[in-house]
Length: 103
Image 1 (cartoon, rainbow, N blue to C red):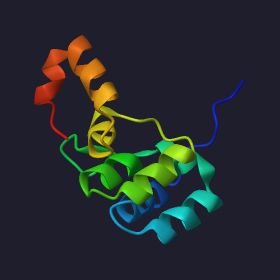
Image 2 (cartoon, rainbow, N blue to C red):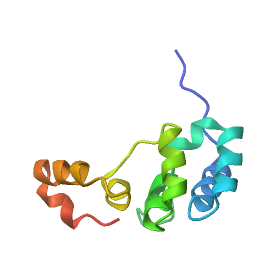
Image 3 (spheres, one colour):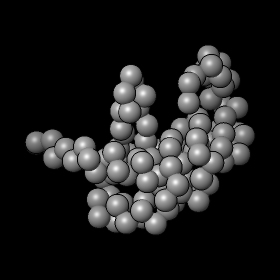
């Protein structure tokens, strides 16, 4: 079985960039390429970001919820932004060092 084709890096970069504040742009790109939902872009220096991460750090609840509804994998930062206290507590109980993670 062969691996699926890699996503176009320019498309991944555009998708993550749009997720900082353009819900319509995110919808359009995700409709064209559903595999983008969990794609990750490296802004340099190990600063890896998903569209969900972009939406979370900009406080874009609408974009975050749209991405989650379409299969994005929730992370600690998105859970915190969305007010999912039970998720945040569970992660921090299991991994207390996570309170010092960058993001």
